[in-house]
Image: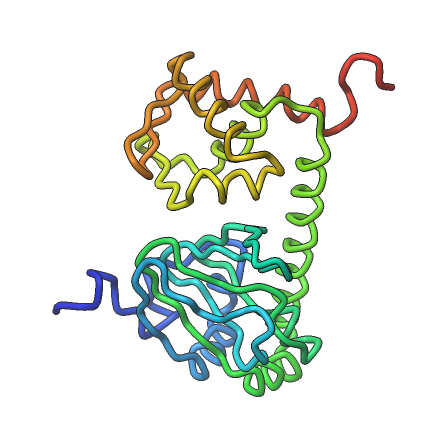
Length: 245
């Protein structure tokens, strides 16, 4: 059956072959059945807006397939990328719990399958199912931990290539590729660097034959070397560089 953008039809969470571990997808069957009953699914192309900053929060969004960029816009109109979200993650939990507006905008980085659960249904679920509320707490904790790691990275004294290595390493697929889907300016925003600095960092990694790139596709040719660079970056982030206790 032909589907939009060649994406799979994911009508049933219980039989879904894309279920990820550690989030909402691997809940016990009874909780997953209640979750599945109130969700609806939509297909999105690359570059589609899911919600925008300041919009009233009406649904929580589950990324079933694809990746999503979260970003905010300053009063000067500048776009600041705060996070790249992967399949299995849920967007809008904080706003749903607080009854607040979306604090960021969400845009797909590739063709994606997104499920939606109305806030009213979501609140009913967490009132009646302890497993779902536990998963909500875990996901909110994950978001706080990710934000803290991001702040530490922005404030670290690691070099630009080290920061870039730390960013790229978790994105490497089994075939050694990274489908970035971000401009160098967006990567710079994430890492707290200028676009020119990011461009030089990419050039440095290419010169050292750690990676090669064509458009948005990056081929990591020396994963071990890239990983070693992140260990140096971790030392800086944790305050273990020379001259620090």
